[in-house]
Structures are given as C-alpha cells and as structure tokens.
Image (cartoon, rainbow, N blue to C red):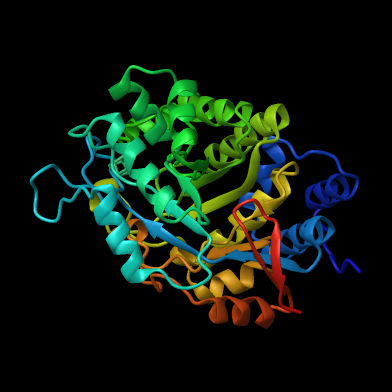
Length: 368
Ligand code: SF4
C-alpha cells in the first residue's frame, strides 16, 4: 500500500505531483523548482511513493570490500585528498601479490564484491592494471570484481594507445565484471574546468559507460555535489544520465555523493546540510525514472541520515566496505565500513526489509 498523504497548496508543486503520479517525466525546470523549494516533506513523500512503487519495502546491501591499488595520480582534482605524487610520503603502488596479501589479512566471510578504484598512475603501464585484476580474480574467483571509474578507463586509453572498447575488453578478460560510478563529479565541462577536474570530460565519461553497456556490462553512476555547482547543473547532470539510460539501459543505480569538506583548494568550507542531502536523494529518485535504485552512501552522509533517506526515495545502502579511503581522506567523519548486522539494523529501523544482494542486484538473502 503506497502512502498518499501529501497536502500542499503550492500550485507548481501540485503540477509536479500530478506529473509524477501520471508517470510523466520531470523536466529541467521541475527539478530546479524542487531544489529551490523548502517543502522537503512533500518532495520526500513523493520520492518515497515512487520508490515504493519501484522496489516495495526492499532495501539492498552487499558484503563488499574497497581496494586501492595505487594512490599515485597524474591529476590534481581540487577536491581530492587521496592522491599523491610518485615518491611523496604516503604514496604507494601495490602489486597483485601485495594486494592479495592485504585482502587475505582483511577479508571476512561472505564478501562477494571487490570495489576497486585508485589514482591515475602514469608510472606503470596499462598491463599493470590488467595483471593486478587478473591476479586478484585468480586468487578469489568467487568474488565479483567491480573496478575502475570511467575516468580511469579514459586514462588507460591514453597510456595504452588502445580504444575504450579494447581497454574494456582486456579488463573483462582479466576478470572485470562492472565499472564503479566515480569520476562523474558534475557533468558540466565548465564546472570541470573551474574545479580542476583533470580527467575525463563529460562526453568521455558518458562514452565509457555507453561502450561498457554495449559490451554487456551493467555499471554504476554517481554525482558529486556540494561545491560550486548550481541546482541547474545538478539537474542537467541527472538528465544526461537519464538520456544515456534511455539509450542503453545499462545503469543499475545512481549514487549521489555528498562532497566532503577537507580540501580548501576546492573552496568547500562546510558539509552539505542534512536538508540538501535528503533533497538530493529525493530529487534523484524523481528525476531518474528509468534507473531502478538510488543509493544512500553512509560513508558521505552518515549512518543516521542514510537511515532517514530510506523514507526519501533511497533503496540501497551500499555495503560493508571495510576501510574506505577516498572520502575519509577528504574529511569524512563516518565509519570506514559497517558490518552486515549494522546494515540490517539500519534498514529494519526504518521499517524496511533488508535484502543482501550481489553486484547485479540478484537477491542472496532476505532478512524479514
Ligand atoms: S579524484 Fe581521482 S583523478 Fe582526481 S586527483 Fe584524485 S585520484 Fe586523481
């Protein structure tokens, strides 16, 4: 039963409610209007309605583990505190065997996905990235490898001289099953220039995912919000993702990532407010009518707000993670991972049904 307790006298909001309930697609102007409205409860309830229609009370999570082969990076994105120069204190590049030793030390029973991202290390050849995945895949054949952002894939084409398709196929042969969603930041070339996003541009980001989808891979996508971008930039970002999804149907989930405040270069003085985080989850749910799941990422918005977001349109709380590094380097003060028990507690506490999933949202266990 879908709750329908939305009372408002705002005519423009009523139009939007009417459109959503009639399955009509929201426009750029609708999305911006929602962002500029303070009526968070109406927006949240509407997103909740849409989510309950799509996913019922099921909320998904996965037992996974984050891995970072290298933090050496040729780029200097303004918001990044993870990257290091080669030779700088704290810089590292692990071999496949070193990574296996790390995983053997930290893995816990039930982990079914490795989430792998890292720096754009130009001091090692593309073959290094292929061999590292291969070594991991051979040692842990039952764990799904979700690796690299579209920006990393674009970087690999530059260091290898191969096409996007050839890079993806080489990685697929080594064990790659899905791409992570990172590197999207805000899909606006102007924003990318101002924020010194020294990596794949908008077309390249979209094209990598398009090519991956054409090769039969289903992937993830993100939006890093909370810096200099306008509400319009955010909604345009969502619309570009929605258009690619219309074309390929290859995105499984959209992940709004709340910007972390540590790096002063990026001009980010404070965290996003809880209002902004919840609104972004809800508006993502309303704009992205062709993507099945919106993820609330506890690493960036905290455990409590993640739980709240389940009443605002989110249907996924990511996973156990184990030692997240990128957001923590950027100033996240949240846990570096959660246990399966904690994730189940969080979902049940919101009156939802926890469902443990694999990378592709196949259900492993339902915790009624
Ligand atoms: S965000 Fe990624 S590409 Fe940019 S500096 Fe950091 S590690 Fe490098």
